[in-house]
Image (cartoon, rainbow over all chains, first blue to last red; front, side, top):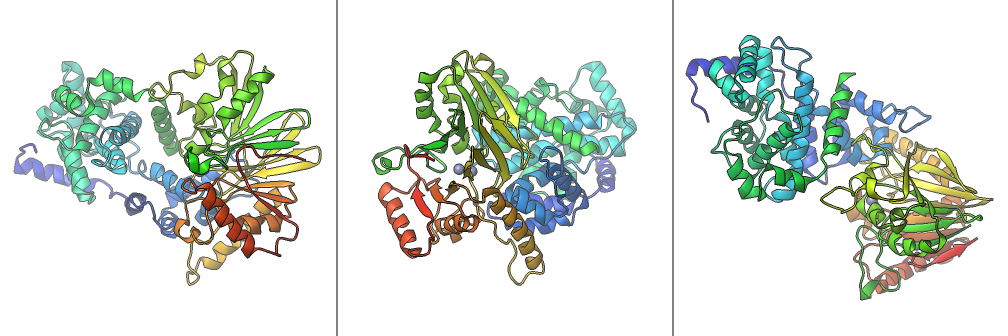
Length: 287
Length: 295
Ligand SMILES: [Zn+2]
Ligand SMILES: [Zn+2]
């Protein structure tokens, strides 16, 4: 954990409190998805209470892809048509992207951030399944990837001036964004991101994973997958508007993945499906 | 028209001495129109032995209809040998996946990735075409008409009805009979029941009066309560369905992978004993590899 002054901690705490709560419905869907035997009626109950997820799910089932002649109007009907498993996965994909602000004053590209986070999330889950089976839950891996950079959003919304200075510093001096944040603000997005997910009452391993994702000392299986995914996403052009540090990469990559970043990417093969999915989810967020 | 089973096993191939009579390959059914039109239902491992017989009738024009994207229904596709020979055409049909946002091309795409298969799609010599189908859509292939019906499985599953000059068959792919997700005391129970009955009636209509009804019958009545929500049917439900829709013959398939030939025959005998005198002319058959019907 980085050392920060009490005064800065208070400022960051205030910023975190200004962020919207993480929707309860999303929390519940995430909880339910951890249990393979979750009861469909519990899922329906959660989703029905969330008008945004409900509208999106109904939009998909009523879309031209299926050409249904009768309009589907309820989540219960959706269970009968799509099945509880498909509904669960749809809800999860929608619910996790519904918490972003529409605009910010820091010039931070929210859409690029969102696509980057979704791409990273997909890669962390893939790495977790392939390289850390049993050590890292795939759903937790996905969430870790999705939220690891959320601290940047907190900065963009609550400290727009300082954050835009940090973005400029990182670009002009060619230094990783988290170092620029530290120079300008005094703490980087890992600190504030961890504070936020803690407030959202996420499990401790996730909080630690987010807190340590640019930190050399951190080494849970999920953390290592997140680190590697971050590097891969950056290679693919999805860098969440900020360069990733590579200081500890060589050690981590060799130890868990048995090679350098090129070798890991070669083994993963074609990632275009993950990118296509990320693009689709981020578009479905727009309208 | 005629059809032949090339794979009748659910979930995973199970070769070995205990499955010699019914076969260990996963789902694949060859269907022929009166004019020889080739329709292949699902691309489980049964598609591999089928493919070898097709090398005698080049150029092959194969119309493959995928019920759903689970491995046991697609993992033979990359080994469909005609794909590697110029002049052949393969047209792959199936549903849209709402979670990934992809059409039926995804079932090839995911398998032909560098780490999992040595040949890329671009390197395959045959012409590969994709047609993502809507619910209730009918496509004409040769002298056959194929119509989709959305069934009940953890992923989107299409049942297919094939008509050819007045004869017909229906294949469910994987399907679990609809069940109420609420308990009888719940407020939503009655409303949900009404919705199920409406959907069930529409599904029944799509199978009405077929000459051959081929149904996912993975479990026994006794096993089913422990498998609710897994997306598969059981003997008694398949028989009830065949009787409701007035099918002439019922073929029970997607055999549970741990069931040996002897076990399969034993559970089937018990089911038939339980239904003795109540089948009203319905013929009930256990699907096995190599079984063929011309009608
Ligand atoms: Zn199956
Ligand atoms: Zn299946």
